[in-house]
Length: 225
Image (cartoon, rainbow, N blue to C red; front, side, top):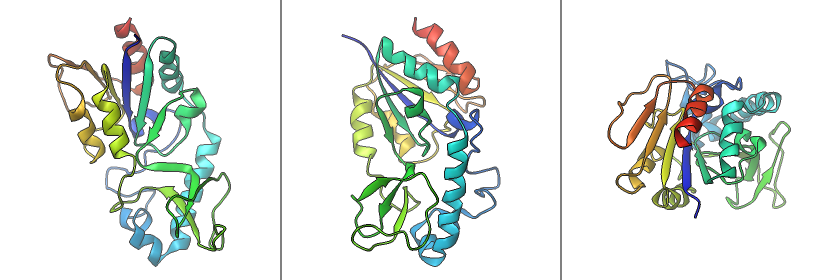
């Protein structure tokens, strides 16, 4: 029976595709306070600002391509069962060919009704005030904002409990609840941590690969052979 690799990815996974990591050193997102553009309160206060913020992110996403790390992870499906749990809201894993991707924080190329959480639709153009669902409610980005529940977390936890190998790429594992996921793998499960500035050291079942996503995944593939 093929081994099950579970991969947790964060902003560092997509950075080499040219996608800016949302939050920079001073905590601002593209010059905006997080509370302005990534909370329900921010959306209520200034919906035009929030919609335009995500319109810019969406336009940028449509101009970039998956990098080699995305493609190498997709290729792992030739020999393993692979589940990807990502904090990223881009679709680069899917475009590279990965077939089982869970988005913890939502998806930039989808929108949903403000009146019905389950009414989600694909969306590739700008989203503006006046874009309504069939029931007349304003559409909003299908993004999990700060203070909102993370609907996919239970599914992600369940996947982690079944991991034979855990791989963490391009995330500091400081953002909860995503950071808690590594604690759900069985004791002794091999863990590979790929990050240019890892805040952890290698230990018995943890192998640290201090490199970028593209270089680190190449190293990972060698180690898995």
